Image (cartoon, rainbow, N blue to C red; front, side, top):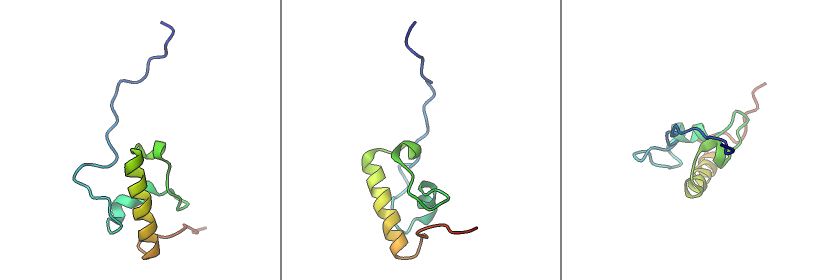
Length: 75
């Protein structure tokens, strides 16, 4: 058997179907921002490209309205 066996355990989706991706939902958006304040990549978030785009747009809107910080400069 030359092929490497991958894990058969299914990952839980990071966005549930009842959660709305919206700039006002800061508790959801904080899960997709790193400690430095960067938007995490699609692979780390386990999102589809459509979901990643909507999350990125919502995070950027929340930053402009001061609901989320642009960066985390706590030393």
